[in-house]
Length: 229
Ligand SMILES: *Cc1c(COP(=O)(O)O)cnc(C)c1O
Image (cartoon, protein in one colour):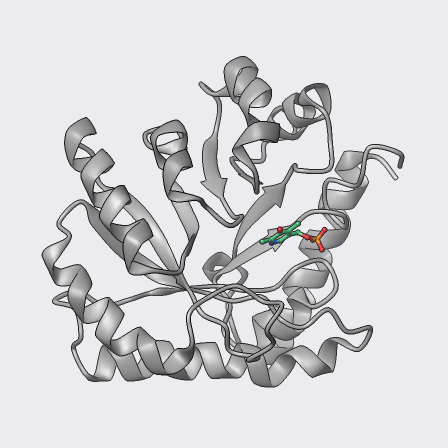
């Protein structure tokens, strides 16, 4: 399939899922995950009109950034080590993987020094699997409350990863749990501003994620493909 065909297919599936859920496709934002493909293919992604791209490791993203950093909006979606914050700050407008206080401290420090605000998602381990990163749900309230004292960090939403099951339905309770957690944070006015977004849904489960309230999908293989495709 060409990239154009992939985009058309994804748009069709997004529309259908929105229809089932009684939502507007305008509520759905897509990060095209380019971690599997070359700089050349990443350039084609931008050429196709896609604005948001996602990378999960700075080591792999660096050469792409050097070639294409002036295009589009970059999202950091992978686990972030504190000593890599200096590399990604100011380059990635969104960080989807804020999962601990030590990382928040370093993001605040670097964002403050650069005089910018960094938009972040708090990554939550809803499924409880040991293999998944993200903070336990029961720690999220306290953590988010502390972010009031981090003026260079803007919490735009919550992020989670579902278990990698062949059955997308298995992801539904995880996605629903993230939505409920966001709603509880907002009902409790934990921050002076509402937490709007839910970053959830990958190639295998994004339709379920839409039904459960996703506002940012992170799509790699189904949208961008892998290099060998
Ligand atoms: C790789 C990756 C994705 C995209 O995965 P696909 O299943 O190929 O869509 C989404 N989110 C994160 C955090 C990833 O690492």
